[in-house]
Image (cartoon, rainbow, N blue to C red; front, top):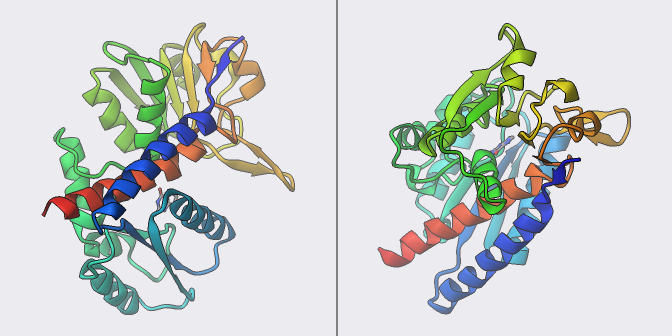
Length: 283
Ligand code: GUN
């Protein structure tokens, strides 16, 4: 039976350290500040944004939320970002994705000052990650790496199979694993023989957004399974991208959904905001 990787507990410990470090900065008259921008009414985004706000408050980080109606023009959004770029109280800017269809996402992400891009989505930060000299690392993959570190997984020489190639998770986590000297395979919807690819993995990172698509008997005995999926089935139930119960038979350790990767993502947002404020303190 697999060990359950308690993301909630790992996140709680990190958040305590973040809160303590935040207090040290506040004592030097530097309060870390995060601006969260939400355009439109997407229910999941609203939940995420309110969780981010609460987490900031608990850590002692100042946060402001800018809720804009879904019909907001791209120009107005860009103007707000400009304003936040030059706001001295703000160390981090996060524009919640997805954006409404009439807004060019790439243009918006490029408008955020790379030095305040706590999501790590600006092409500058993407490039810095690619070349192995990161400034801000995207929160979900960063949280996955912290989690693996905290349970003592050494990726050197390991076969890591990632299912999903998004800019938010799949691609950046691949780069992070590569930086830790893993051999990385990125699989996706057109991958041929996916079960065989997954079966070769020492570490499986599932980030496809399809409920329980990765079957338990694909998992190699003793593998580590990180499930990034958050899929709502029926009215209330949340399930991951991995068939959890069956995967537990083979995995050495596995993240649950919820309570696995989720709490780590927001934790790393707090962490990035704190780091940004520390850089301000040193300027
Ligand atoms: N939407 C889904 N994940 C994320 C994330 O990590 N950051 C932002 N800004 N939007 C998201």
